[in-house]
Image (cartoon, rainbow, N blue to C red; front, side):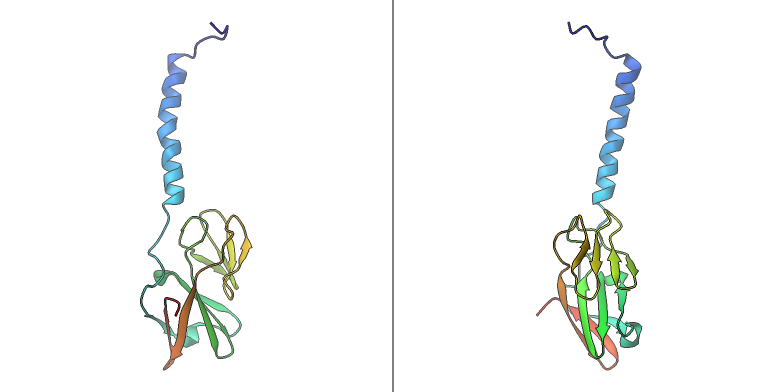
Length: 137
């Protein structure tokens, strides 16, 4: 015998009850993924929605589009850390709700870990006043 008293039945039951809850919390954290980035070209809307020098987040399609003059750039908004759908854009900074990774919406570069890989670049065109984005060429 170790000399330590055995845990009470109450303590054992409390511990057992808490264990599945902890597992659910981990599942919920990693389960906040949305649909993947576009696998085919998708019409996102009016090009005027993307401000000059800024970016616009298209949550329904997991795409962010930025604009510099007449040049548009698009990236997937699926976080490269755990696959969560990024749903927040502050200025030109994308913020992942799962673990706080931050990305530059203009370049896709990581600004704050835990992510270490940049966002996936997508093709994008402004045609007839509309933005169309899809998989990289």
